[in-house]
Image 1: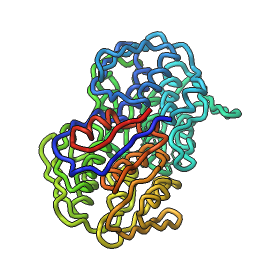
Image 2: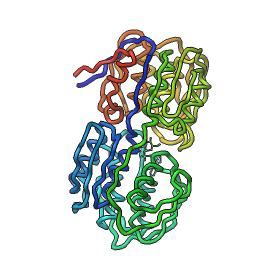
Image 3: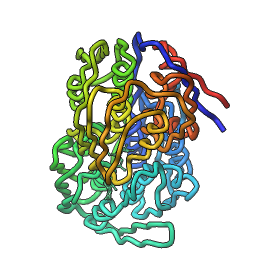
Image 4: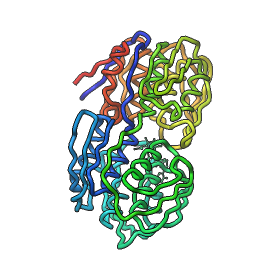
Amino acid sequence: MKRIIIEKSPPLKGSVRVSGAKNSALPILAATLLSSGTCRLEDVPDLNDVKIISEVLEILGAKVEKIGKEEVEINASDIRAYEAPYELMNKMRASFLVMGPLLARLGRAKIAMPGGCAIGSRPIDLHLKGFKALGAEIIMEEGFVEAKADKLVGNEIYLDFPSVGATQNILMVASLAEGETILQNAAMEPEITDLANYINKMGGDIRGAGTSTIRIKGVNSLNGVNHQIIPDRIEAGTYMVGAAITKGDIMIENVLSNHIKPVIAKLNEIGAEVLEYENSIRVIGDRELKGVDIKTLPYPGFPTDMQSQFMTLLSVANGKSTVEETVFENRFMHVDELIKMGANIVTNDRKAIINGVNGLKGAKVKATDLRAGASLILAGLIADGVTEISDIYHIDRGYSNIEEKILNLGGKIYRRN
Ligand code: UD1
């Protein structure tokens, strides 16, 4: 089984370029199904999750051509299949994002229940609520969900929770529906705005993306366009924590600091120095680290996708910290692994209390999900001895060239097959 090995490393120093955002690339790749023209996407990160959704698109009948390492051209003029296979859907929850575009283009979509990281129950009721509101009939079978509609008509939809995926699916399906859809309590993540910008470029009419009320006027068809994916704010945040925890000095290039204000604020509070430039951020970790309280929230709150990386940082900060996870119900699986490495963390339901320790020690640990894997790499960089991480396929789903990037910063990391 493949493993990542990390040895105690010197402070990380130098610069690192952040890739395009996984969580923006996946919905935008799904949205190429809405158009019968050719779309060219730039800054598409070279990740397993991107490969999976590309395979789904191909199975549905789209032509997907990789132009360069991070550029893809897609033509979905000939999609006919409305069913996405279980083998691929089961690998990644975000594959469910093809349901909205398929329903919009073909009036029918049948999808296996999605897989992905095992963080909580992650239901799809809000996605289905949106499809139903636009006139689709929903059929649930063993392991499958199907949506059918002769005609989709815009409607008012209130989301009980600002789900990122549900907001994206509704934006996509409503873009080709008749009339106007008003989506209330929509997710406000930058990846929603990127998707809306992309659909608008194709000829769509979406207003208010990035706020909690989004108005989508349906159009008859969407054209092929070129689009560049926004930078990955979670990858950027992970390297920022890398600078703070190793007491290093890293310039993070290709990052929009507006997208990661809560991460910057918490790093400042913990004691790292954060300098913001137009498209880059420098983090210097030369001061004492202090414990803080963190609560994850939908955007613009503190991102749940940065929770585990900060947990590692707080494990070695002075004093007591608390971390409350409000977005997912089961996102503390990294805690047991950090405890194996010497961290002092006690959890109670969705709250963790962390008492800072002087240092961590290398151990054999498991990446229980994508961001948990990143938190263990960060721990390994400062732990005495050697850390060996298994189940690294989770990490490959979401971090592009992570070993190479950390090696370039002076970290001691390699992969063992
Ligand atoms: C997306 C991100 C993921 C991130 C998450 C929250 C992608 C590909 N993934 O996931 O990295 O951690 O946003 O920022 O962009 N929920 C329901 N009903 C639904 C849908 C969701 O109850 O129909 C609940 C989920 O169980 C979860 C919460 O809402 O507790 C957040 O889920 P959601 O915002 O939908 O996350 P994803 O789109 O799956």
